[in-house]
Image (tube, rainbow, N blue to C red; front, side, top):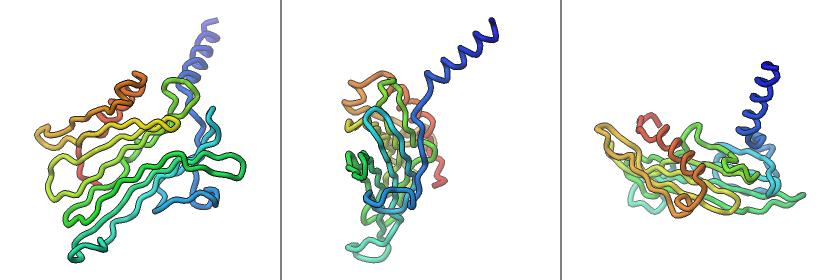
Length: 204
């Protein structure tokens, strides 16, 4: 009986923490009618009670600014796309676009490793898509702007703040109204994600 109890406990635990089954995609496995800009950083597909979904994260590499006074200025961009699929059709339901333009110093513009996630924290069978990235043009070692953007269905949630540098400078963040008024599970997850990645390591 004890063994049976342990097995049942494990099953319940796995069920409680189960998330959507994600299928990783590459350029060749993304449907041809889906459009995106830049180089694929991450692409996944899953099904929830809203239907069949694809999210693609892309980046445009650092390039010389076209309208800058000289060739020392650079620019770049990050994109995230969500497509809803039905049969042979694909509908763009939301897009994230952030960028740096005419930057004469160091550009910090990239998705944070191991932060992209598709969850169901409030267990409503609607995916929450989490994206975290840095975006800045600066020539010093001051805190770098840091963002968490989360979408559930077509609803956007945002956390904005900065990284923490030597001397415990920076690290503050604010929830937007959607997070403040949303489920507690969302804020707890966002806070955990922030604490894990707030310290600036200057490696990227």
